[in-house]
Amino acid sequence: MSEALELNRARWDELARLHGQDDYYDVEGFLAGRCALSARERDEMTAAVGSLSDVDLLHVQCHFGLGTLSWARLGARVTGLDFSGVAVERARALATASGLEARFVQADAQRLPGDLAASFDVVFASYGVLPWIADVAAWMTSAATALRPGGVLVLIDGHPLTQMIDTAEPVRFDFPYQGGAAHWLPSTTFYADSATRLQTTHTVQYPHGLGEIVTAAVAAGLRVTSLAEYLDAESPQGRQKLMVRGQDGRWRLFLAGQEIPIEYALHAPLP
Image: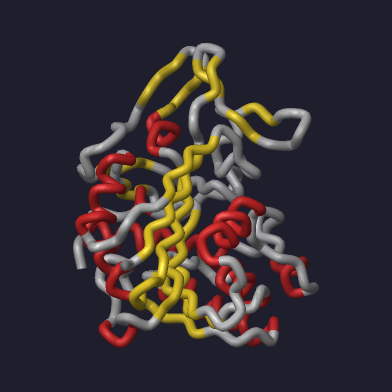
């Protein structure tokens, strides 16, 4: 395992121990029956798949399982995958506590276990996905390998343009748009609670532009049928200081008075 992957896994092990003890992840509400998925996640899944009845779904980079188990509650047969062993153990405990059936697997999303091949109707991933991935081509190949013919990848993530921005007034960029080079970033806080100081002091993240992402999907044998860019979001995703919340409750980001895309959604079936 590379030094960068080990460093990122240590960060996510630490986050998996902390998350759910704050207001950002409403574990109590989930256990009481609430859905932990955003409206955009549900809408994109409906557009790509329709009903989840009799659907086998692989949730990649599932963290501690709230989203995965929400898909189970909506009718899918679910498998969650994450490289953090702490997250996987927490997800299994959450499945038991909720009474929902799910399988959770510890693995790197760039190198899926062989027994997951051609096993799923949907591969799903959302929010904070590809910036953590060194090899986006390997990630897409894993997603394609996991799908049955006719299955579909549904990916929702922060827009790579927004990833670049450090400040909006004045406009300043501190991260590349694309290229995939590793960037070692000092950080002792995290998006769910900026007041908590973490023991892990750095992460490694990777810039992937939309062209690189779509090209990797096509090269993996997927057929991109939809790529939507969104100017609003349900949550600021840790960028509250940059974004403005409108009267409709949605978050937006303005540069020089113009809205810029902050999320994208990609649908890519396997022929």
